[in-house]
Amino acid sequence: MRLHEYQSKSIFSHYGIPIPKGRIANTAGEAKQIAEELGGRVVIKAQVLIGGRGKAGGIRLAKSVEEAEELATHILSMDLKGLPVRRVLVDEIVSFNREIYLGITNDRMERKPVIIASGAGGVDIEEVAVENPEKIIKIHLDAPFGLHDFQTRNLAIGIDLPRELWKSFNQIAKGLWKAFKENDAAIAEINPLVITNQGMLMALDGKMVVDENALFRHPELVEIRDLDAEEPAEVEARKYGLSFIKLEGNIGCMVNGAGLAMATLDIIKENGGSPSNFLDIGGGASSEKVTTAIRIICADPAVKVILINIFGGITRCDEVARGILSAINELQKEIPLVIRLAGTNAEKGLELLSESRIETASNLVEAARKAVELAGGESR
Picture 1 (tube, rainbow, N blue to C red):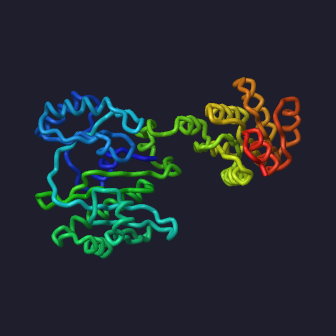
Picture 2: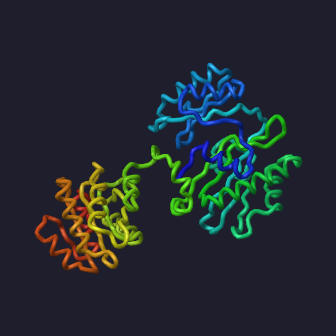
Picture 3: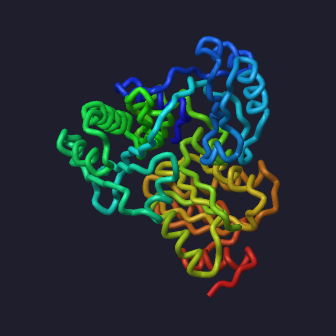
């Protein structure tokens, strides 16, 4: 789950990280009022979950209250990369003489968090990694022990930070680590962290991505989730406890169990097909849940055939069959279905489906081949 800049910076501020004065505005009138409070010279920043807002015209500097209102009016009317701008952040303009990157993420290869710093802030860290890798300093962290003073000093030395700023840099880095850990983040970054003309460190921009699997521990974050940037089908699936990810193919997939779902996608690809989604209905799925899953798959106009692969354990195959029949009656949409049932009550489920026009298969490979053929692909 991605957070907006204003949400990320609010969390950072809670952990003692200095941020500019500013507030969120939903209208141009609110932006004007905030600009008046901040002295007129402000930056207006579109709050949409995309990169490159500045290049797209979503970040503008205002030199007066009137200009702030004018720019806010313009930005609030924009769509940036297909996403509507519903609010803007109005921040004081901060004069600075240097930009730094500071971020924390997980290194999956090392199975540890890693803190990353670079003296080349203000641009995409990926570009720096490719063009100037020597400017990136990385330190892996042992999660139970956290971030130590000597590690932040090593980072400060590595990015050639003036010695008089080491203490505040240490506080900011430790605050970022706490924000990362306590909010179950996958990414927490400040870009840029600037040295102001007054000789202070300040986070001008912020980004956080929170692990969705940990959101049950953070109801306060769930409440502020922005659904504009998310796939509508994924949002719909989440309401019903379904794990759904939109892909680019034309074979809809409904499977119970994440591992079995991944294997199903692999076998479809192996036989020359292309899955349109990952959809795990989970264990013990009811017929209502199955109906909902098929309805979500059918909403994708690219889908030419649906492959259903159920291995009944907790999930009963006859319940799945009832859900399939219910979905067919409800949707009245002519999309071919291929189903493989195995396990608990599989025979009963197949008996329920016997009078329908659904293709059945005795194993997954056979089911995948039939689905690929019906989708117009070349099965091997």
